[in-house]
Amino acid sequence: MTTRRSRGDGGLHWDEQRQRWIASVTLGYTPAGKRIVKKASGKTKTEAKAKLKEIIRDHDDGLAAAAHHYTVADAVRDWLEFGLSGRDESTVETRTFLANKHVIPALGARKLRELSADDVDRWLAEKAKQLSTRSLREVRSVLKRAVDRAQARDKVKRNVVMLCEIPKGLEGRPSKSLTLDQAAAVLTAAADSTLHAYVVLSLLIGARTEELRALTWSHVDLEGSPDTTPPSIMVWHSVRTGGDTKTKKSRRTLALPERCVTALKAHRASQEATREKAGDTWQEHDLVFASGVGTPLDAHNVRRSFRAILKKAKLDEKAWTPREMRHSFVSLLSDSGVPLENISRLVGHSNTTVTETVYRKQLRPVLLEGAAAMDQIFKDA
Image (cartoon, rainbow, N blue to C red; front, side):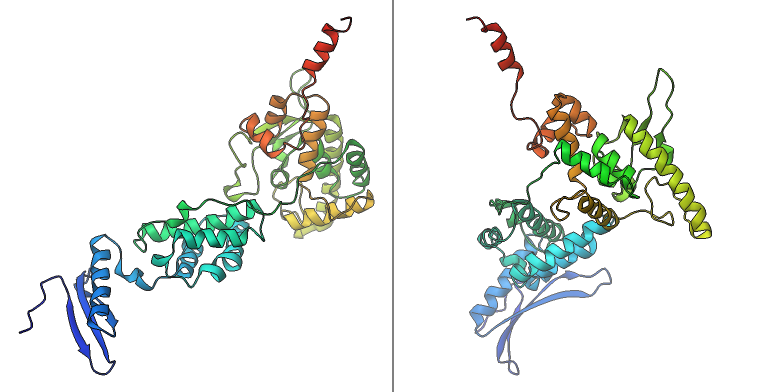
């Protein structure tokens, strides 16, 4: 005689229409009092019972039973929709591209609960043939964060992405800096451009492009105080989400070289003329660098104008980006013998390690003081 299954073990019956064994179990009740029933099926009793045991085991482990058919693509799309709330629009766009280009096509069909560290290792190894190490770090981050979110919602027991190291990818685009002659040529070529003051500040004070695009006239002091305070700008904001600078150390006040003061005064006069010409179409944002109607510049505006300047300076406009004017600032200071500690403060880094890591190719690699001292000591030996 068939014995009744124990309470909590679920039920098992043959479905004539489907020609399959159906296993079911009650896992609790909804807030409205409706029973939560989960089912599994198999061609044999053993297969159905095994699936039923897996559902019960996951429930006992605190894992949502609904995760059984939850795929990597489901997890990634859920993170893209809800996990990026409040992030900058460009960040959302970049992460969405990486997810749709590199994560979902390769791993999306895999059930999340079945995703293994070996799967992720093979995926990263394959991507290492196509992407730079930095890009590999970013695509791995997309997957890791998506699985983190799924894990927090009991869709999966653990995050296997955490077990996988990032392999070395292709060599990325190397950072570079303008030589003194090239920098001088760029400054000369920019003289008649609406971006002249922007280029001057980028090269002579090393501000980030996103900091200059957010700079307001209220944070510019072109007069200073005689014998006490030189002309300066307060680099307190950027176009990042919330308007904050990249780090706390990035918030800094910088004295302005005379060439910057001259360029900004000319730029302010030019902007006044543009404002009058725009009339009622002008939108006042107090921005130092704005469009013809006062609205903020975007990265594309700056890049397009910068390329025109490079072409006029007889440099390859496709080989340089606006951010490399900051690299050039670091390089020129280093070549002039300015101590690393001072350069670090000027560019707004938290410490010299960051400066050495990011701008290692722009810093003078040879310490000359020891050699000069020894030459002096042993000059007659």
